[in-house]
Image (tube, rainbow, N blue to C red; front, side, top):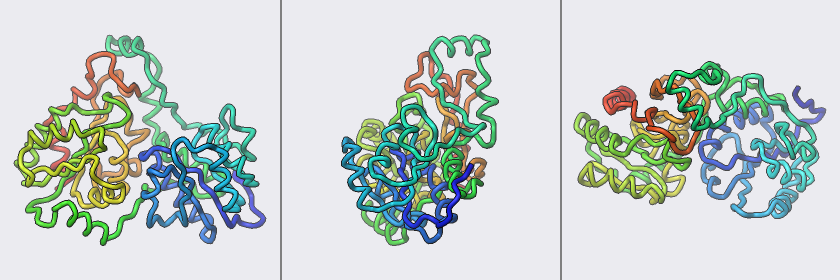
Length: 372
């Protein structure tokens, strides 16, 4: 049931999510919120590391940053200065609801979850189509690969409304917003793209620019083997004469260094892992014709900027957390037929058959098709 308003809220706080990919998946809900309240001042409470993501975004008037480790009381003090009359709490944690409670925001809306409902003035029930991303046990996995039948996860996640963006749209709909999905959307300017091209030496790139993102913060179960990335990148470079931009954080440097060395000279691969700001990363992803990536934050960013992505999926599910609007034909989301996938584990307890079952040839063909 949605909230009714005698007077539309003038100042709305949205408590944002803490992970890059999750933040991108909230953008359809934010756009619907802006559509519902076109004249409201909408502020986003966001971790400092993500504030650059929201520059130029049409749904947001301002961001209120907070640092990791900053107390709920300190955050609430900042929020009280904003004089908000409504808060929409996107995360499910008790802490996120507590922040808005301590800020004395009079109307506070979020999902009903243990240990936090007292802090909200309206709780929203879970959607009937919601699918919990429960991790499989090692015993379940061994049973499944020997023909056992445990649960019916593949039929659950096959539901067209299972995707995570619907979770955030459902919350916005509690405020009267349209729940129909939109494509996630981010914005970079032409000046930012031109500056990134110049800063990173791409002005004289002879062929197309392709992106490659071999890391994944969540764990190795989400990473297609680095040897496969190398073989695929070489084959694609031979066909297209492309310049590869290697993306990643500082923790991905070992992977990107290995790929850079294997591919060859700087004209073939530019290793930028850990060397870009978030805005520079966005501009470079926009610059790419296609991005070959694991299921990770930059995958969502690239898709939200309109760049096609090719993604090997193993431990996770494209039906639940895939890039872009569900069903977007620009992207190539590749899955193996491993019966234990998706398991949602950080590390594979057996033989990593989900990712090893995705051949280099299949990935190369997908990149060539998406980048044509």
